[in-house]
Length: 87
Image 1 (cartoon, rainbow, N blue to C red):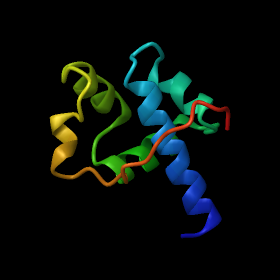
Image 2 (cartoon, helix red, strand yellow):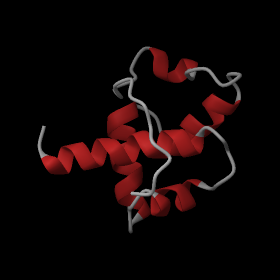
Image 3 (cartoon, rainbow, N blue to C red):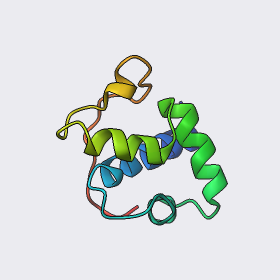
């Protein structure tokens, strides 16, 4: 994978980690992981996960902190450990 693909995947992995907690809006998460434009974040997130950031957040919060059922069949993210260090 190219450096840009790696960075994109890292940002989406990090966004998933933040979205799980439900403390921040999807706009805040997009900015926190390095996206200036929410529309770019939205597009990449949906391409990578198969659902929107808000759908991910809601599904995760309704699943008792397990992988959201909405992602089980089409989840495209590799199982990785997410660091809490800043990007």
